[in-house]
Amino acid sequence: MRSDNVTKGVDRAPNRSLFAALGLTPEEQARPLVGVVCSKNEIVPGHMNLDKISEAVKAGVRMAGGTPIEFPAIAVCDGIAMGHIGMKYSLVTRDLIADSTECMAIAHQFDALVMIPNCDKNVPGLLMAAARINIPTIFVSGGPMLAGHLSNGKRTCLSDMFEAVGAYHAGTLDEDGVEEYIENACPSCGSCSGMYTANSMNCLTEAIGIGLRGNGTIPAPYSARIRLAKQAGMQVMELLKQNICPRDIMTAEAFHNAEIIDMALGCSTNTMLHLPAIAHECGIDIDLNMVNEANAKTPNLCHLAPAGPTFMEDLDRAGGVYAVMKELADAGLIRTDLITCTGKTVGENIANAKNLDPEIIRPIDNPYMATGGIAVLFGNLAPDGCVVKQSAVAPEMMRHSGPARVFNSEEEAIAVIYAGGIKPGDVVVIRYEGPKGGPGMREMLNPTSAICGMGLGESVALITDGRFSGATRGAAIGHVSPEAAAGGTIGLVEEGDIISIDIPAHTVHLEVSDDVLAERKAKLVMPEPKVKTGYLARYASLVTSADKGAVLKTL
Image: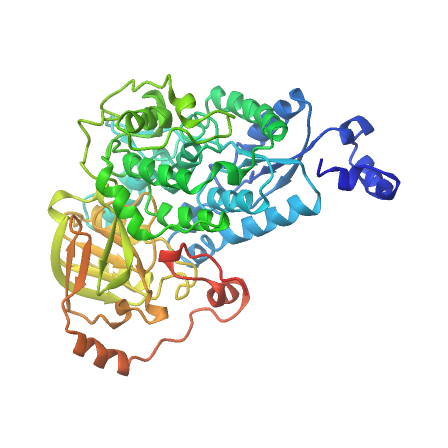
């Protein structure tokens, strides 16, 4: 065992004395040491319950003959960090999480790992760490939040909460109405209740085969989540016995499956950052052109919030991720011969899965859309691509042309939006918010929610080199690459320029001649970096483009 490096022989007597200081008996030290990476904290609603998950995992490990030892991973709540400087510190934690987990796992020579993530960058960060460390590993998340209920009977969620602010500024909702949303939008622990980034990544963890059935969908308050955690603790010991490691599971074919399932579920656009970053740690390249290939052949089967009025608890009740995978497998769209953390193949795992609600999970011959939930657009405005959650775009905005309204920060844009300065037909451009320019590639949930909340969601588009929350809906096009701070065309857009968007054709075009763009580029003076010290400055100097997953360069 790897742990023999710290527990066996006279030369390791000092090491054993420190294990004794931890209260571990010789019997415990002789068993496989399983690191339990728990992301519990008291600032993220999706993580407040993870101590319960950790205790269940440790019980499972002990039942199966291992010695569980817990250590932490950090997590940021994107909702609380939204709309201010704090959002610059969200994406950057993905690498901190991966790096720190790698350090802890190798420094202490664990034999296996159980990862307990839940929200936002915590999930991809731990997946990156799992690929990098590559010892037997299984994931069990904290689970999604339940949907809220308003007094009028309407079910609600966090994206409605953000749009309520826009409605208030538009004069269509008073302070009492805003307060009702505050009290009801987020009624329980868990990752916010729609198909936002956290739930998208937890579902894709299950889909790619490194989390057990129900990992992505069992609601956080349900006792089934505790049972799942115990099963994960027991199963990691089986993975150790069989020496099944993350890179045995997370193969190129498994990532292709994940892309297909992503399209069917209608996941967050942030998956287009995270899947390439995780694949990169496995030595696998994901090209954005491959995403459109997946999009073209995969029908969108689910319309969960913000795309539709249903929530993660509904998807769980309808059969969960496995039921979606069964629909796709029966149509020959995913590989079923791939090994998973169950020790069985995808096909064996989903053999008995059933679609229990054909409105929540549409059958393959009656989809919400004939193509997938996410599209990648290319054109002179984004030569290396940009992404849009097309399943959450109003039909009338699938094709749009309008004048650019140009802002060099989220704050500039939101002030004009709230002041009523954006008109139907406009294309809001927010730049210098990319991985390097932000730095940290902030989510633009506040501007998109304001646009929708003010009744402009069917007439105004927004384009940015930043990114979006999974809660964003509307014609919100992000991840523009190259970004403005890297010399991208988005930095050359001027007020009033016409921008043409054609989502079905996968194009986005700035209607300005190449000669004029060359003249503008020759005269362009780059703004001073927004941050010059600390971790963000170091991050900006190392981060790559969004189309590459915003991974850090290796020096």
